[in-house]
Length: 433
Image 1 (cartoon, rainbow, N blue to C red):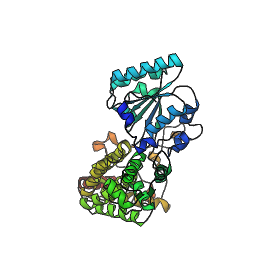
Image 2 (cartoon, rainbow, N blue to C red; image 1 turned 120 degrees about the vertical axis):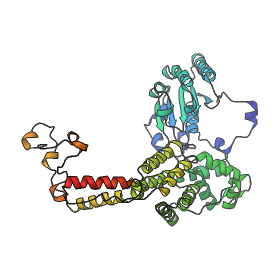
Image 3 (cartoon, one colour; image 1 turned 180 degrees about the horizontal axis):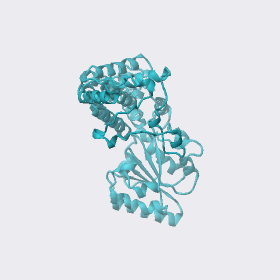
Image 4 (cartoon, rainbow, N blue to C red; image 1 turned 90 degrees about the vertical axis):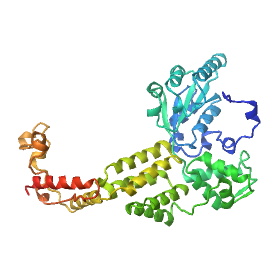
């Protein structure tokens, strides 16, 4: 396979374990079952002779480069790799021109793989357009960032976007076990204890490349790879943490309670403990988002914004960098004034509904837009609040059976204090108190 960056020195250098263990067919690829099943676009690309343009979007180590290699290898196409970190417009145009020449002379198609394509500027991405539009190459772009923000629309609209997911623990185990026994890997020359295997799985965090890099480092130290050997090789102590057992529930419980108790230091400890143990960062992010409304609420309305932004960052960036975003949100949540008024309010309202306290929607609030609604009296007597001073007008909004019910009882903590004062005045006005 061709590459713009091949050299004699590189060929003489032993390839890393992660490179040697790259799958040779789609059936050898671990994970991404949603992309590799019968009839999927990726299968059709491999089984078809027609060029196609793809964007592979996903976290590091999920197999973006691997899939590009497999497509080229299985279809017997030339493989040309460009790194967006170091290549320029001149390199892109040269690669395209060589692909056109090869196609014209031999009829052989080229897979043009651009790694980290989000790093290309507009001019560099524009240079790809003719090749994509005229199908001179099978273009495959790999990115860890949302292509809707980082890729120009003309290029994205002419390509198929495939989203890759972090590998599961079982997928990583399969990758490691294969590497230990396969002749391309360690070839059975080293053994891997069960505890060491689980430690490598946790350290990988869904990144197959990282798991193989750590395995290779451990194999250089000893033929019998134990937890202690792995710890020494990668300088990471094994965190005793079972994601399916008591430790999982105990640590996440302590994490939530530390934030609720406003101890940012303790909350950061449990956050670090989960990250280092390989906990799914999306799970952590979901718990922080829930906490922002459940335990902070309107005492600091910006807390939810921070938590949601951190959750989005986890999706866009992935670990390890997203750990900083999670820490940002955790510190905000822990140090924010606390209020559980929101969760109590929706809980009380849901409780009444479940008990059957529902009642009829008042006639003046019912939809009056469809034909015949006026004859039924729908919307009759409704007062439009914007027509009145302060945007308020006294009229019943709740069903008659629920007019005396009180759900939202704000605290006087933080930013909820002025809300509490305003809500008290509004409620008194609306109820005629």
